[in-house]
Amino acid sequence: MIEQESWADSIRGTSTDDFWIWAIIISCLGIACGYGIFYFIRRARIIQDTPTSKIRSAAQGYVEIIGKVNYLIQQPITAPLTTQACAWFSYEIEEREDDGDDDSGPSWRTIEKKSSDRAFQCEDETGICMVDPRKAEVHPINEDVWYGHSKWPSHGPTVKTGYFSRGDYRYTERRLHSGEPLYALGLFRSVDPNKAHGDVNDETRAILKLWKQDQSTLHEKFDANGDGQIDLNEWQTVRNAAEQKAYQQRLSRSDRPAIHVLSKTDDFRRPFILSVKPQSNMVRGFKLKAAACTVGFVIFGPLALWMLIIRLAN
Image 1 (cartoon, rainbow, N blue to C red):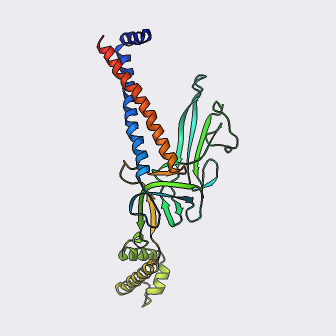
Image 2: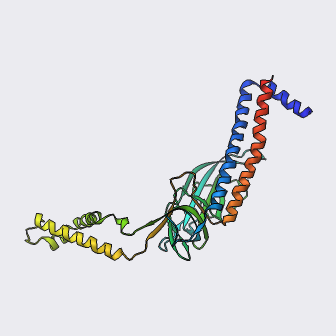
Image 3: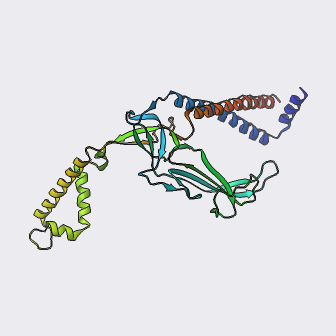
């Protein structure tokens, strides 16, 4: 009771500017926690309620796929900081700003960060799906953190140091590797190989554009009268040949399977998640975050209201 009265006296005696600053901060924390409850619960429900689809039979739209990571056409990419072969990476380079006190440790400022935007493959027992990782929420298990004295690391993460390292720079790199399990939740689309090249007219124009770049071969094949120019009649022959080639190319692609692509949906309420962690771990993690937000809401909400009552009653 005495402690509560001392808190109340402090609130009454605080200057108006300081009171409203703290009241706004605590109120914002309560609102943020309240929003977080619904945000994380909704994500957990989406993961739980979206049925798992097989790549070969997946419906067009928002789907959940469980498979494994594979390189695009067997070509890995190189992670910039560790130079390791991987299917996806993100990295962050931070610079030390100050050492802080003994409890908080040093503070860091991000000076460079980047995520890979190259597609990779998700493969299950029924087929292969291309994954466009742009704007995805990625949860890898491979993460390296280490320190150094230059903006770009001079050594890899084999030389690690502790939290209170005296290095001026901190490097963080996260990666997805081929063969790792992959939980994917996003927009699934199947693309016809012919549609990817447009209609016949589009493909004919593309062939003509390519042929025009090699004038010597063009004249050799289609300059019938040998005058060194392609006249109107000869140009019509060129166009007919290009159109015939376009039809032949489309016929050769007709037996190719559709290309499946997983990417971010335009609906901001539906997350695009790529995770090496199991589905159950994802659900549990979101529920724990929702529980933490609930605790924060229960603390900060009534505290902000109590502060206002004490102040206004003064």
